Length: 405
Image (cartoon, rainbow, N blue to C red):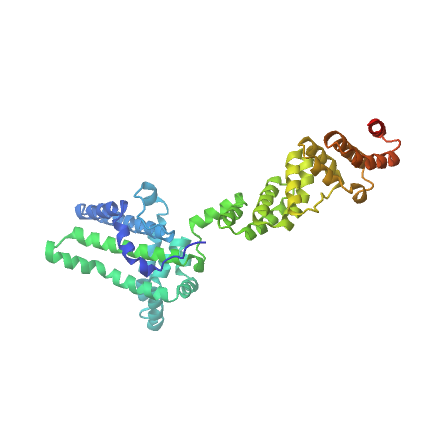
C-alpha cells in the first residue's frame, strides 16, 4: 500500500533547501557569477533562459517526488528548450491583454488580466506536465486544475505571492551588511524563483492522481506489468493478500489455459491458503496437462496434494489413471496406487485403459504387497471380461501362480 503524500505546506523547509542541494548550489552560483561578470545583453538573455530551463527541471523533479536539484548537464539545459519560451508567453500574457483591450474594453481587459494573473501558477504547472502552450492558456483546463486543487491552490498562490517579493526583501536585508551587490540581487532572484518552481512541482506530485498526471515511476510500473502479468500477483503475495492473488491468477489461467507455470503457481498458492476447493479444481485440470507434457512425476505430486486436501478426489480423465498408477508404483507408493484405481470399472466401464490398469493392480497386489487374496477378485474380473484381450495370457499366468501358491 502506497504511503500518503505529505501536503506541500508540510514540506516548506525542503523547498528552500532544494536549490542549495548538490548541483543546485553550483548552478545558482554559476548563473549569478556569469551575469555579474559578463555585462552583455546577449549573455543576460541566455542566462535568463538557462535559469528558467533549470527551474523547469526542478519543477519536473519535484513533480516526480524527487526532492533534489537536477544535474546541470548539457542534456538538461538543451532538451525541451522550447518550455522557457512558452513560459515567457505566460508571463507576458497579462501585459499583452492589458495593451490589447485596455482602451477599447477595459472591463474585459480587467477580467482577462485578473484571471490569467491568478491562474499563472496553474498555467505554469499545466505547461510543465502537458508541454503544450495552448493547454496552458486554455481557460477551461486552468479552471479545471484550480478546481481540483481546491483550497490548496489558494494556499499555493499566497505562498508564491510572498516568494515573488522575497528576493528584493532579502537583497535589501543584506545590503545593510555587505553593500550594494549585483551578484546578490541576481542570486536571490534566481534562488526564490527556483523555490517557487519546486513548490509548484510538488503540488503536481501531491495531487497527481486527482489531476490525471501520471508519474514516470507509475508509467514504468504500468509498462512493466504489461510485460510481466505476474507482478500484481507477486505484490499481493508480498502483502499476504492471498485472495487477491488467487483471483488474479484465475483470470490469467483463463487467458492462458496451457501455461503450466501459472497453474503451478496457483497450486502452491492454494496450498498456502488452505483452499481445498480451488486446489482440487485446478489440480484436476493440471494433472492431465502434465501427463500430456510427459511430466508424470509432477502429475503424481499434484495428485497427492489433491488427495491430501480431499480424500475423495479423483482425476477427471480416465486416461490419467494408468500413467499415475504406473508412476506411483515406480515411486513405491503402492497403497496410493491401489487407492487411485479403486472402483475405476464403475466410473469408467468403457475405458480402453481398464484392463491394463487392473492388471497393474494385480501386479502390485501380488508382487509388491503380497496380498494374493485381494488380487483374486481382480483377476476373476479380468478373466471374465477380457477373454480374448492381449492381457489374457498374463492373467492366466497370474491365476496359475496363485493356484500353485
